[in-house]
Length: 124
Image 1 (spheres, rainbow, N blue to C red):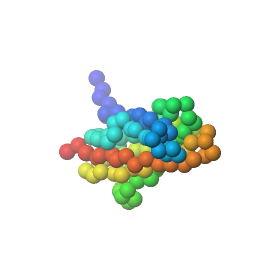
Image 2 (image 1 turned 90 degrees about the horizontal axis):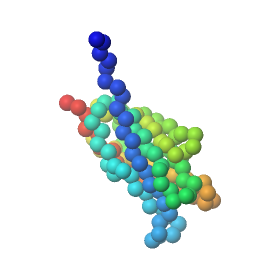
Image 3 (image 1 turned 60 degrees about the horizontal axis):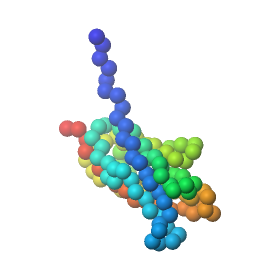
Image 4 (image 1 turned 180 degrees about the vertical axis):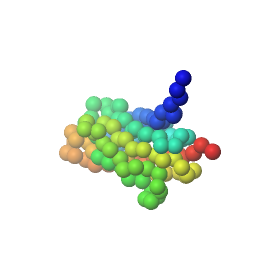
């Protein structure tokens, strides 16, 4: 019997984005999990917009702090704009502050962002 190396770890994060009901002109963004804990090296992270209340909201990109972290690859946005994907080396224990960038294509192109975190907890 042959053995294969462990497959790539994937972490899927659901994103709900809706216009705020309490602050007109702004958006409420929720991610689940709110702070993913990455425990495997070379993990692929997918942020996926799944609930927009019918609004045409898409990803436009992402940034991360600290800027020079040697952990995250450049992001890729799907053709539909509903998925943002990147890989996490997860070789150093640290908290990464991510800024997800969005655009409401159906509402005069309003751009906005949301700042979740990613917790790197590499295997020992």
